[in-house]
Length: 275
Ligand SMILES: Nc1ncnc2c1ncn2[C@@H]1O[C@H](COP(=O)(O)OP(=O)(O)OP(=O)(O)O)[C@@H](O)[C@H]1O
Image (tube, rainbow, N blue to C red; front, side, top):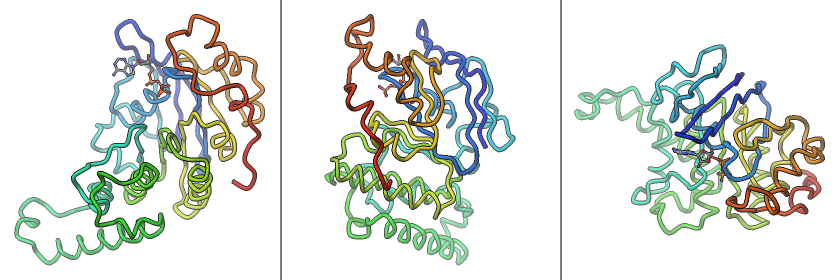
């Protein structure tokens, strides 16, 4: 479904991605891990065309993604969530979700302004879809609430709902469980596992929470300093000396500027059962 080949992105003197390559098959759930600043979000930004790559190729369902304009990404069936939430605080939860369906609307400026019957039908259909997704994610009770002021765990689910209403085939999740409590992480893992098959999704998930990512993904790609340093099944990657060094080496080496978010026990924590 997705082939990333030799992808390089530079910001001035920083090489955020350095010849990164990996494939993702349809239906897979792939984890993208690596210490802070490894290049994970930059990779997502390339896949969604927020960033241009300096070199390399990205092929999605046989199409050269680097030639696709950013506004056409959602229509191709690619949706994402954001590390720091990308919601509109002054819109209701339901309207935030509806934003994710913008590419499904066919009404033009004039017909929408005149409120023609076709426009009203289309709106009713999209609202029904929004309500179904909100219901599926347990958000019906807050659908009329402004996005501002809701608990972080709820907002993470709103973001997921907004991605799902776009009917994606490829879902990119950027730190979906960051900031959630242990029980919320387990709940999110269960929901993600279920909606993956319900919505026929292929998923790439960036996450620092090793228990979550190792428990839910079939394959892990690890980046460090913009380079892919490991790829394989979770058990293998967890034991990879280069991966352990990338995370643990930060305390004693030149990585002193980076934040060490996760200890060795976090990295080596057994995978969650039943997720
Ligand atoms: N727009 C930008 N301008 C300049 N530098 C950038 C930009 N975006 C990312 N970088 C740099 O590229 C490198 C990779 O950043 P990126 O955010 O992709 O890492 P990450 O693996 O997602 O990190 P984290 O786990 O902390 O979110 C970092 O050194 C970062 O400072």
